[in-house]
Image (cartoon, rainbow, N blue to C red; front, side):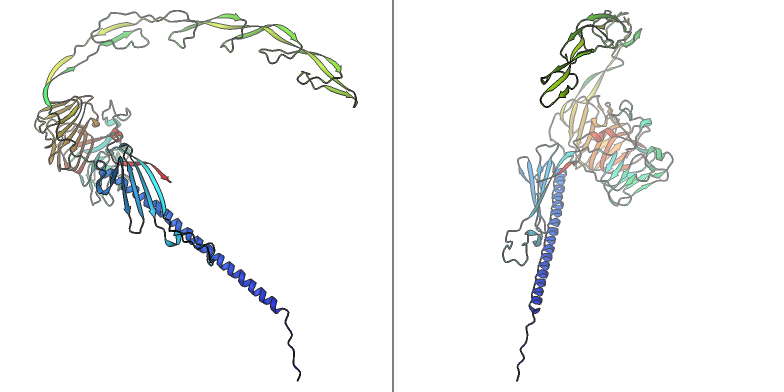
Length: 615
């Protein structure tokens, strides 16, 4: 039997090595891909946590802003803690996240809100994964790291009075000839002497309600030259002869101009609690008033400029006033009737640039060295070519580059010897001015008017200070800047009348359950609505305005249902702004919003003026 010996295949080992090599490459590739995928998932989860941190911080800012607007007078309310002038609150959310918000109230004008969020990211994003998933070492065992971001905003209080008529709930504009428009008492282009002028009326007689019900604003046949704003879902109705919009649009259209009926009302109503429970009791007295002219009138002739108003009681005849009539060496600038002549002077010293100067020069000096720049220099060069064996020293003026000739051993230099001629004697001619002044003669004619003095008696007189009374019947005069608290409410009827003197101002707080403005009304001589502010306490639920006369001021009654009855046929029935729980208008009313009230800062809601993300 013959045994067959098997032979070894020399290629078998190579195939095995190639297979192992390919498997290794494939394994490394899969490991790299898995590591890349894990890293991308980690980065995505961290990015989501980072973005969420900003949203949570903004939630903290919103809560701080709400605290400022709702509890600005007692910031420790609703669980807030106080540390000096800083108030803080930490709130944990249901998903494990939280924020801490701080209010820095060291400046009551511009409080600062800082909100810091702490986000607990998903487990995948809490720690950095190992570099290679199958590594035996390098497992991340560090504690989870929260994501934190912080926002800091600066706030300030804007104006409270941003519209003509604002209500929490329904506004019903019944009656006939009801109108709202605007003017600006601080702008001559929008008013006349600070008062409403129908020829300059504006389109900011806005009517607004925070409510969001059907028929929130019933405009009827009123002319509303401004926007109508309501809360989300609120609707407005306009009668067949009424309209909402600009003057230019309303002149040819009824109904509502596109874009002038909105659902964005979100007005803040202020805290109108009584600020104190005692004060000065206003007393009555006599007041001397002066009517008629109190200054002299002047008639003047031969005057290019009016001489001004003379003091009262001064009597003078024709007066001759002469202005200076002389010559001056200093130019006085333009003068009425000025005549200017010129003379000439000559000097040997260069005077610099002089208006009208003529400059001449005489005399010349010749030098061998270049003299450098000279005023009015004329330079001539006469030269002799010298042949020298020594190269000129550095800095020697040679005119042009020296010629070189010779061989390697002997060099000859040729250069010019120059002479320079320049002026050394100058005479400068420039003008000396003489000024003649015209003489004016003023003729005054004096007219003296006799003022009328009247003594009036007032039942109540308020100067500067804080006053407190339950009775304001009869006549009242405000002569200074006063505050008045009426604990049982303002009740005007019959012959009651209040006068705000020019330059004076009154803020009146009305308590009780009702408030009435009527009688002969309130006369605001200053003519600016901000001079009279009526504030109804939260207990006041009824506010009646009987418009027998004109009213210029601001009325704020957050919980009161306001009824505006009657109204005369004056074009200035109500000038200013009003805020109430609801408004019902009967009869005839012209309502003019003073746009300058929108710049009466410090009594509105806190708004954000700057926003920054901080470390």
